[in-house]
Length: 358
Image 1 (tube, rainbow, N blue to C red):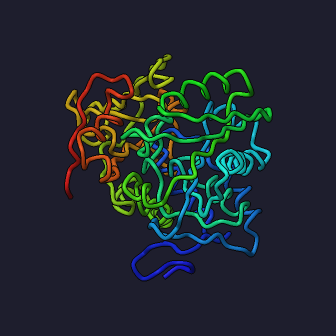
Image 2: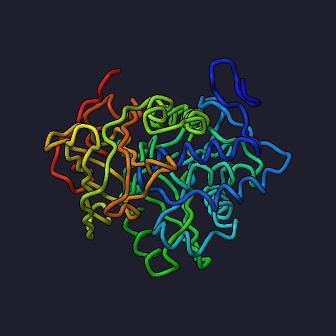
């Protein structure tokens, strides 16, 4: 067993030695989006030092939980990196506004930069990190968080990269998306946010549990992979294709913010595989037949380095592989949930694709 891990595989703490594995896992669950994790990993490793962030299960005994994350352009985030104060300041703002203290922090989404950012926030606030998140992967919009599939009034605060603080009491999660997206576009390009505090008992029915443990396990498994086949097997996924990129198309989209597609030809079968993208890879077809779609996790990796490839980084001639990892069961449990993160929620006119049971 690894240090900080129970016999059932659940993580009980995050230490500096876990940071690289966590980063590999959250990058995989970014599904081609969620931002580059490297700069956040460096900040987390430095902040932890010889200390550790406790990781706790989601149950009613926790009291109040605050969800934290990042919104806006991940490209701008790479160029204008956080100072380290934005997320703790957003957390403090919702505590001041509501008059309630947070007992724990949860990642709004485990995929991409938000996973390690939540751990960094928990450490800075002296709070435990909940072994859960509100997506199970990355997704582009605030109103797609699992917390908001059923209406729930929330208080939320955003702190932009320029220092602007925006507190919203929102009866409808689309209000958060509209207000923050507009403000962020005119104030630095990205912002940190905090939502809550939410009673843990309420959150327990609205969260994807075990996310931190899953990301850490996937990251550790990926570290030992030798090729795309062993990577797929190690992280519990399936290899759909391995080949050269034939075509890449990109454009803008009001629903998913970007829209594009990538086509590659499998080196073994000769099949043409097309992967449609919003901010993340969301729909995959082999010779025109759908084989995977959100909420499953479609992951594109470089065939040599095995590093995940973002939707805006694929180029014609690249040798890439397409993997599909199971999505969080929470989304499949109810058609209303599935609809919220189905291809049509990303502007793609296609049905969800049932997951293949190995």
